Length: 617
Image 1 (cartoon, one colour):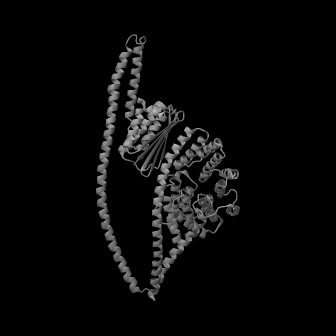
Image 2: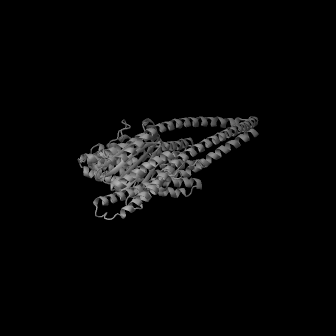
């Protein structure tokens, strides 16, 4: 009797824990239903009744989905959360944040998959559906090669959908993938849209589902060459979007497609107007891909107008940006395959654990006190042995970490000494230029000033003018050599400081944009890159006659991209290379080649100059 009572006690603990999980799932289901309907205001109201930990992550997810700017580049998984449902919401928030700012990163897929596996394990239907919608969003955002896996997710959503919003997400994904010829056996025709129209009649015209539907339907009409109807749908979709940041991408897409229609109708000027409108709504956090599309469509439109030079320049910019997109896409596909393998292993482990749990539960009912007592002793012994082993392993790791830290400190001291030596040498040269050569030239200027009749003698007057010019150049070089990249600053702060100093003169407005700049690089590399940027900015000031200059510094995994653009008068590189004035750019190009990088100049007379630098880091 005692044996049976103890077994029932253990089972009651398991049942209580499961009951608590079911209660929390019920609270969260309505919140998720509002999210998939884009009702973010109502979602926040529901979240007010959650406990603190769950409420905090729920509000965070709503803010990310509605694209609150303060979270950009700042979110990481919070593994300290005790509530597993709060951790799921945290993974969804971080996943969507990564999807918006780094669409080629596989982390979004990984986080959404973890939530999907958890939901299936705990039979949480609404969370499973939301995770499926999120996974399909990754595929829709940047399609992977593993289309069979995508079809499995789509079929699973079809099997568990149970309301109009679920049906909308299923049909919308089906439409997107079919329009891109992914599933050639799925027929999208007028009958399909008749059914879709009936479904959409369940939602008011102010519902946020409508812009995406109208824009997607317009793509289908384009394929049927029904350009007038397609244009009407695009314009209606744009009209229905007010100030919702999370729908900006639909405006961008619609304007781009309108431009394509005008090109097909041989109306390139109208096409350029629509591309201009699209540029207003480009994704600022993923400007590489947005700028690729803009430059790509500009290139063909200008070519139709007969402006082949500008069209070619736009095409070159698009081709340069596409290199990064292709690289990140390939990396994402490899990472996604690895995630899928791990997910399959996890699902296998879950199934095995469920089977073991069932066996254990049956065993507990029939087990005796003697066996339980023996198992308890064995567990305590195992824990004690494991604890001792872990302590020994931790001690070994601590010793190794001390050695690694010592080696790292020695390496940092060596690098800092080298950088400091370079900066001291620059300082010495600057001081000699300023104090010795500068003082000598100042003395010569004084003697010239005392020469009688210098204003009457053209040769003396010309010599005095040349001396003044040389004196100013020596002073400029001295000041330039004094502005080094200090080890306490780093590349990005130093560039921003330089931009601020130049902008304060009001002669040139310099702006700096950075994307994905995380940990610092080697000091010697940062110093070399800063000197390169400094020389290019100096060239702009001296020669370009520009009023604005933009510096973009982007880091994608092991690649650093620097783009320097001005609105100056431009130049002809072929002529410049034949003169002495072109040696500065030639030296910079050789420096970049020494760093195993690429150096590209794109300059159009009267249109400005773009310089693109790619460096492996």
